[in-house]
Amino acid sequence: MVTILISFCRYQIIFTHYSQTIRKITNLFKHTDVGITFRSTNTLHQLTKPKPQIHIQEHNKSGIYALNCNTCKQAYIGQTSRNLKQRYQEHIRYIRNNDPQSAYALHILKNKHEYGSMNDTMTLHKYEQKTPMLSPYEQLYTQTYHRNGLLIPEQHIGDTNPLFQLIINTVTTDTEKH
Figure 1 (cartoon, one colour):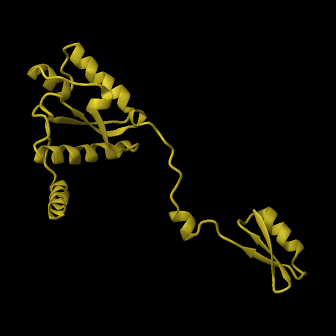
Figure 2 (figure 1 turned 90 degrees about the vertical axis):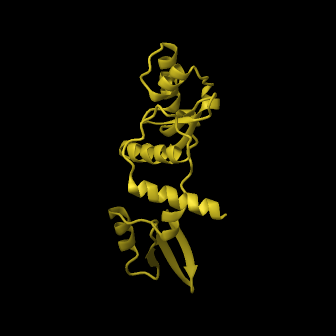
Figure 3 (figure 1 turned 45 degrees about the vertical axis):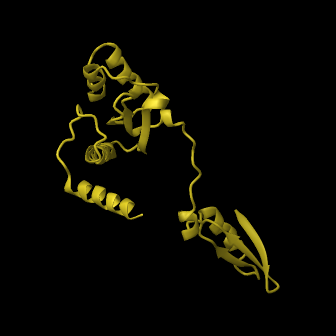
């Protein structure tokens, strides 16, 4: 992009990037009254400007999710690097085939509880595309649900992480104050 401005009766040309072509152009004006200025496009404003959000329907996202039991209102916390719809269909297939491969399917089958449609049952808690981040986030949400008595008993919470406990305690204390 090239912008031409008139400044103090003198012409000024502003270039927003630098390349060999731009250098050749600026050399043409070396012995004239035309001022050459370069403007950066990676300004603080440009770097902090919100990026346009690409709207992806929730059931097409990956990340950390909760599957709620319609009977006892407790939840299973899971992670998926695929989309939620695929993962939900797997859980339902386990239930229909009487195959307790997931703690959610085990809970529904063992207790003869009810499950609902994906829109009524499944909630995306954390949209995450980076696979290495799925397990830590899943552990954080699992520990949070367990501490609040909202986790189905069939789900193993794993080792408690002191840092997650600190976060959970801080968030709980802050919400109790307000």
